[in-house]
Image (cartoon, rainbow, N blue to C red; front, side):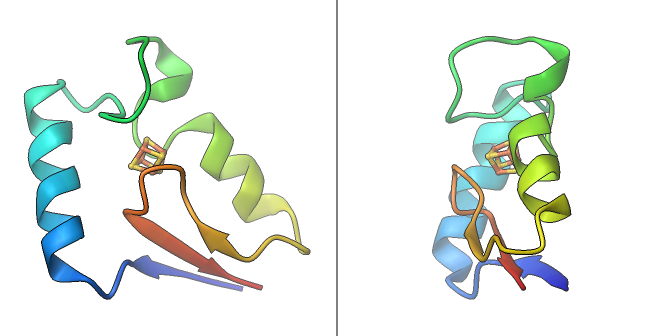
Amino acid sequence: MKVEFNKDEEIVKLIKEGLERNDGFCPCKRLKVPENKCMCKEFREQIKDPNYEGYCHCMLYYKYK
Ligand code: SF4
């Protein structure tokens, strides 16, 4: 299992700027609740799932199996 930033640096830059503007909360999610603080609960659960491979919701990270 490996997690890395999206290889598209433009996307990484945009999402990081969004995170900064949003006090560290996911810029792709509506609510500023603890589970939406980056790395969000949704992606942490996808990381734990051995069968999941793909991007986090915002496409900031990519998780390999
Ligand atoms: S891991 Fe991805 S989807 Fe989750 S909060 Fe961070 S940028 Fe958003």
